[in-house]
Amino acid sequence: MSQIYVPKRFYGRTGYQIVVDRFYRDQTPLPYIEGRKVKSWDDWMPDWQPDPDGVYRNRYYYGGNLGGIIQKLDYIESMGFNLILLGPISKTNTYHHYDVEDQTVIDPYIGSMADFAKLCKEAHKRDILVGVDLVFNHFGSQSEFFQKAMAGEGYFKDWFEWKENGNPVYWYGFTDMPETNKMSANFKEYVYYVLETYIRNGADCIRLDLGENLPESFMQDVRKKIKDLNPEVLIVSEMWGLATKKDNPQIFDGRQADSIMNYPMADDIIRWVRTGNHLHFNYNLSEISKYPENVQNVLWNMLDSHDTPRAKTMLGGAGIQDDPFKGGPWDIEEPWRYPGGFDTYAFRKFEADNDSNLHKDSDQMLMLASTIQYLVKGIPVVFYATEVGMDGYKDPFCRKPFSWNSQNETIREHYRKLGMVRKQNADILADGDMDIICDSELMFITRRSRSGSIVAILSRNNAEMPVGFKARKQNILFQLNSNDPNIGSYGAVVCRF
Image 1 (cartoon, rainbow, N blue to C red):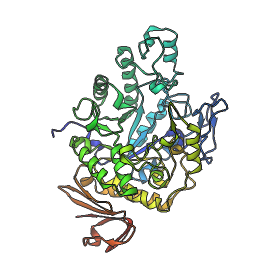
Image 2: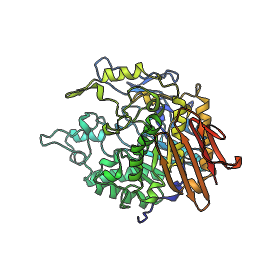
Image 3: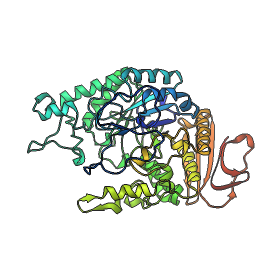
Image 4: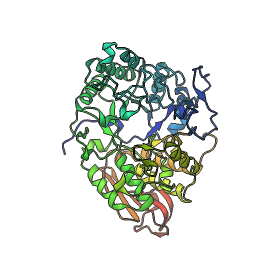
């Protein structure tokens, strides 16, 4: 397949996705904002029940900010992360900031554009790149732009989609998210201004929320603007399925996204470790291998994200979707669906009642899954605090505050070692060829470049078994639950030759 250009400075990096409000707060006092509740950092249980009027809102905060991330850069670097990916940070009505108002104005709890520029500067000193999540599919209903459109101001009305009866088009019917008109020249000028604001202040990567839903021509215009500003900025599009199955795969023509969120790989790894489903793994892998090789080197390979249960819960929790014909392992809401609606309270109560109620081997399963994640082609992206063993079902349970005072040290040390393996073997893992063979119990991963080969044997078997080859001690890069010559349950041996 012909090569397309993607920024090579992202090859071999290890990413870290952060929901800023939930990561760390420095000593900067939080300004007063009416209607916001600030929870104690040690109060990890989400406000999962509805407000007295029956509406589920997301207006409780912990106060994590950009200054807090700057203070934790040493920690981030020590774990081997050299790419930070921030969730949306502009001022909105909720802590998650996907109901955007004006993306050139950062939320006062999070900081200022000067703070963002400082984070980028301090991160760059450590060779850590910084990405930011931008939302162009919709605005929040409280946005001044939408309010002016509702008042009939033609310039802003052109920014939004409208029904024949004159009512706004809302994203999936959510009345707090009016959908934008991506064909509007006026709206595109605003989009360009937002992109320029972040890139001029140091952003190295732009994630496009709901990117797979954005029109092809809009994506091409956005790419041109970004690359005109800085051709080395990586453009990542949100995509949930295989690009080969999409009407607009985006990553094949070199005129839209550089990379996509590789949910199929997360699906593969979690299902194989949890259930041994190697047929599903092999099928998805064969489809991903059709992507342009350069794109494969920068695929956003996560196990979990802000939109899924935590990896540890998907691996060891109850109610996880095991049937690949019914969706990903994160598609767990079916029991609470009914004709024309969804029982949000019952679903969230299930999540609360089963929070941290996990299989006894869930820690081992997570460590095995992350070992695969760190070895396959692309950029492993770790959702904040997964590396210290955080669990939880879907939003809001997957977005608890980082537990700085209570961590699983075994899992944290495991991730630190994986980070060192990637850094010290980037000459192979950055863009080396990959072969994977697996059945329901064993997986063999081989990565090759001109510099050498990395060979990994991984087992989800519940009993010790022979490794299958003799490796000198100096060849072993990493071991998990294994003692030469045997490999144990949820074990791995990674060697370099």
